[in-house]
Image (cartoon, rainbow, N blue to C red; front, side):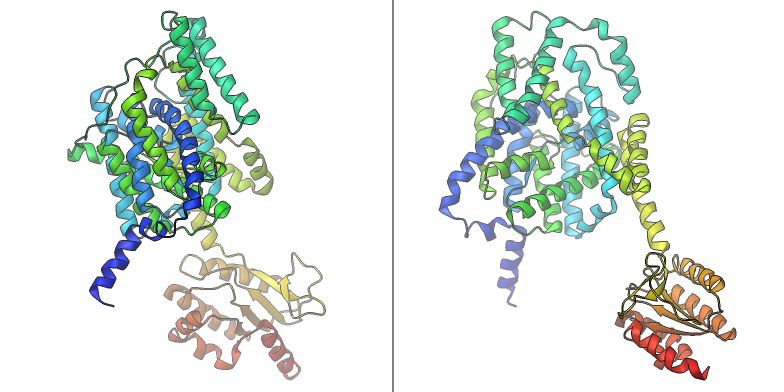
Length: 567
């Protein structure tokens, strides 16, 4: 391929917009414009509210939205994924930066620096094609992590909702603080917060197409301005600067970057899992292909651009993507339209936010959190798998007692431990033939399956490597010891084995020789070509005999039946 063609191919892979823009249909424009307006109506109030989770001024929420939407539209592979502020990763951001800086200008600057660092990690992992990493966090662990975050975030917003002082600490410390200071709450902020929360909760089911957050924010802000709620003790946003954001120079202090790195990596892991899940949900709903590695790449510039313009981190949002889908967005043009209207908001509309009450912002966050919680999933998980349920509960408990960072760390460790356990404990089984068929099934699940005297058909439950071969042999030995009359021949069904390593081959050949020394012969069925090649190199084939490798279990059984009368 000529160099120019290679360069063109690389550019098209790096900028997916070059692939879909030429195919854009004119009749999609109206739908995309209205979808962009719907996104704007959701993202402006939520962006300013989520800034409270991150611990920065509301205006930084608007600074975050515009560059992130544009960057993803240029680089993302999903037609409808919407990137923006997020509650789960926002809380991790606040905890990460809070451990390094005190509240104030330094805190805000470090929050933007963290977004740039997150973007760098996204780009790095995308360039290394490490999109598979997110698969190491299981769904129960991720669900448990999100449930824990819901509780932690809500209790963190309750002081803002009712107008009392908050404290740092774990979930139970914050609960105790709220209970101790309930008597300090004033009537005006409590009424503002509870009415805002009630309105958010009522508008969602009864008027799902109405931008609830925007409506509640407009009504609450106008009411505070007209009724003088600020004088009655309702905290408001105050002056919100207008105009375009200025470039922020990130901190290049090595010690600070090292302190931020663990939190940045945790956000990348959680944020990528959320983003990929939202992108896949959009693809299922509306079609299109998702490139997991390019999604990593796209989230890199989205975060870097947000940080450079004074914003904070962004990830793919399922809730905002759902808004785009419901509004019939056809492409990333909807995101670009939303970015334009957010930019116009920054230039012309921010003075209108001066009387925006903090209890209303807290209500918007709490309503979003209540929408994320899924207690019915935990109930279903308890029925489906007690082990997975316990994993989720452990993660929730760790978040509530030890903290969010410890919760996600424990979740990742649990996922890896479960993976190690499952892969190292292949579920072998004794097989029997279903009556009137050539199908062979686990005799524990199918009592009607018939076995053959003197013959043990054993299914190897998974790949064979240094950590699993011992478990496989132990299960096989146990079956050999239990079955009567004594077994004369073992037929191993290798259909589930895609990989066998050197250690497993060495262990297996030793085991085969032990069986042969007891006058027990062995044969193999359904051995994959790559596995067969490794077994040949390990001399297993020569020890067993070339004739004792069969394409089907039925062939191995028939061969045994032909030989048995002569035994």
